[in-house]
Image 1: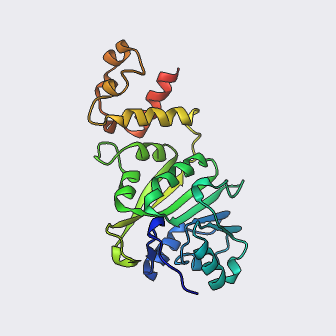
Image 2: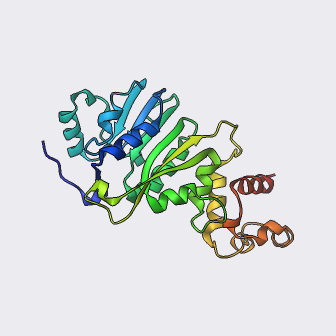
Image 3: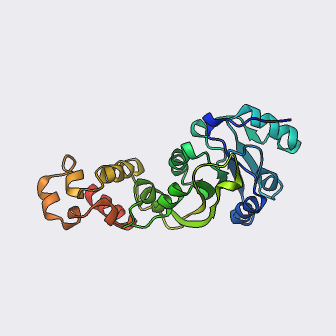
Amino acid sequence: MQYTLKKSLGQHFLHDESVCKKIVDAVGLPKGNLLEIGPGAGAITKYLKDLPFDVYQCIELDTEKVQYLEKTFPDLKGKIRNEDFLQSNKPFDQPFAIVGNFPYNISSQILFKVLDWRNEVRTVTGMFQKEVAERITASHGSKVYGILSVLVQTYYTTEYLFDVEPSAFTPPPKVMSGVIQLTRKNEPDAISNYDGFRRFVKTAFNQRRKTLRNGFKSNYPADLLLNDPIFQKRAEQLSVSDFINLFARLQS
């Protein structure tokens, strides 16, 4: 059975077997449940499905790819959810790992969804456009450090694993790719109001070239913004712990 590439879904299929194996190796020892996002034509699925996880599932939006996967790998029947990950319900109640060659056009949205499931998602091993991978793993002071960096790193330690050349895909994308891994932090959550914290971080970076005093001038009293020296800094100068501590202080 043949399949077609759908540009509307941002499909670039990985064909370099050495890269496939490196991603699977990075997932680590099978433990608990595994969810693969966007298996496509099964580049890494063919390895993942046979690993001794308690339960393996994958989510694929493209019905044609689901049919291709079920015909090529009959043992996948009943394990593929033909739906949009961004609209999907949590696949497991128990802790689980996520892996995928994420569609670049929705990769940030995928991570925001992962953050909604942060209490169950223990690790994420994923391929992103290199620019996005660098943004997620960036430290404060970097020009690419931003909202995604702070929110992800509040809950996960991040590691940039390796680059992937365009030639590893069919068709080759016009950008470099990067594989990263997120590992859930063990300490108790530092934030009790995640939605409020997310809005707070977004507001801080809305005018990233200006100081926090400018960014928050409609949110907090003028005397606080003038007298507290932290508001003289720009958002990119604050570490993740700075954001957490400042938010907690302003909530008290």
